[in-house]
Length: 405
Image (cartoon, rainbow, N blue to C red):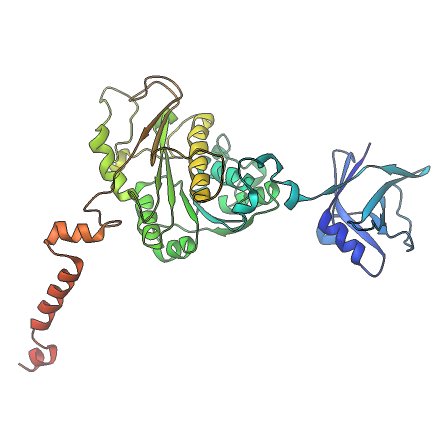
């Protein structure tokens, strides 16, 4: 039994072709059980057979190839009948027309329309076990554009927790993920950036500029702070994910400019709320006051399933940020910080426990409340501080006069 698949767009282009006949290229899968027709030239794959309209003549396909006959449908799209060629002649086989842009989001109906994400752009910075899973989940939701950022290559030890596979060993994670996303979704366009955002702030600014959301899934707090400094002035929402030691739990923080707290506020507030973890424990919670102890989404050893639980919450927080202000039946998280425990450790009393905490904006934050920051340091508004600085500069001796003296 063979099933022939062809996209509606390709079928329409064949119907409009004035020649009325031509070649078909694509792939045979599962020992010939499925013939996937991708195009009309060799760039689309292997030669599968010929197509023609009923009135046109085409060379008969060789044994084992296909014949596709198109017939016009009054008032609707063309229909196609597929045949396989065998020793006894042509045998009719089922032909399925794929309508990806129409059918892809069918399972999401009633939650939100995938068309609502078609014009959205998301940058995923950090493509380890957490970031790679977030990227695939957002692509499956119908996202239109994605910017993938990571300077690492995929190694064998990554595979136990990564979305990519053996055939991608040695490749940049960005390019391996790009190919995976294009296999997952017919709706997404992907850009790749093999850069270290800490070492290249200009590239980081270029990447986040124009984004509707940034997913910060890096393994260093310094890079998350750099992302915060780049995104907040541009009013780009960011979701930050972290998994704790051996992935016993983790957290997701959402920054939503111009309101609420930014990541700088978050780093300051977390230790005040919970303090350092118990010294006797061989695991640790979010000791954000000490960057050397900072838990991260990809670096600490942990079961891929446990890291994946945190990554899925991060993907959900990102989706809700994209859908904010759009009609949806999905409930948003009640706070900007979500903690999730895979096991009963630290502050988690039971496995699979969720905690919701609202992080307030700092009144003296240098990133999201600069006026308050200047006032707290100098006792002046930014305008007053600038005027005072200018007055001091004006009072300095002229450079030419100083050199002449």
